[in-house]
Length: 411
Image (cartoon, rainbow, N blue to C red; front, side, top):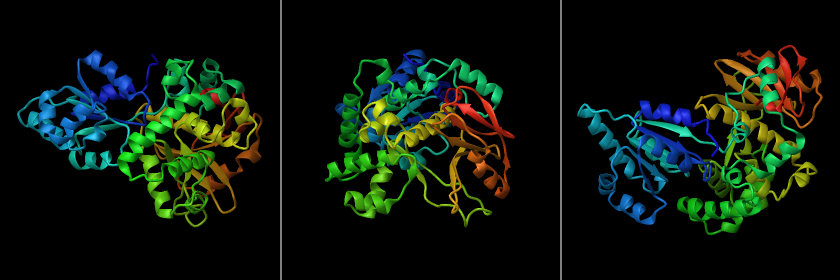
């Protein structure tokens, strides 16, 4: 079983909050991790995937929680949002009576579209929300994971313990990062993702919207997959798929809520506001799912396609963001593009310091490849720290003052 970095943050939350809510897409490993915690900490466990349990939770949440005493793990809690009000009253009562209400409930939810609204209304101040991602490369390889930093000494050490060849990289990108694909290495990726998409549409999407045009929704997912790493232009999608702008907005919100895709917002501040592109870029959380939907069936197909650069960019940005999320570290991520087409793939704003990152699928780079870094640095009110091009080099090297080429294995 692959050890998950996020477990430490979950255990810390259990010690400090009455309720811990673990969110994330289907199949990222929430139930497996909760099974570990159940055994180690002696929690009760119930899943609302069980239709009988779900019916009781919906119709009589007080009875459900009387039958299932705390400390309790409730899996897929989004199916019975009324439970949250009753959980609130239970943890409040324990505190009012002078008891210890820490760690009473662990909840998981794979579809947070309506769940988060109920959480914010019912459990404000009592719940710690932790987002669980697909596996990171370092988790797959059994290596210690820390938030990515740009430091040539650290990057050299991390790359030496985690070298990634070009062939290995494309293998990982196409296979994706869902745990089941690594628990069972003989599992066919096409079969896995075909079942994944079908289950997601039938069990999650249909719970949220009246989806009469399921084929069009799947087509929407397929078109988006081919656009991972691109600006999100709703008008173009509406015309391509033959639906309204309102429908595109609604369907996008469903994919975002289900942790299938995320939007990377453009960076701006007062000094740059008039010159920057205002549209977000869209990324799939998992490159394997995106490759399946875009019909990039193996690494050779991807390597030789027009999509290879954007899929490598998606992989790099995902791995960097996972390294922060897996430590439950709140950090701001952006991209930058101005009207002169100066672009920076990823900007990390952490502790009041900006770090610029370009994601490339080559090896050799020079100052001209990071000219946008200087453009934004001159305009920005923030201090700019070490920055980098993360690429397919196998060694760390200097590009300019405080700017380095960093191997992918260093993430």
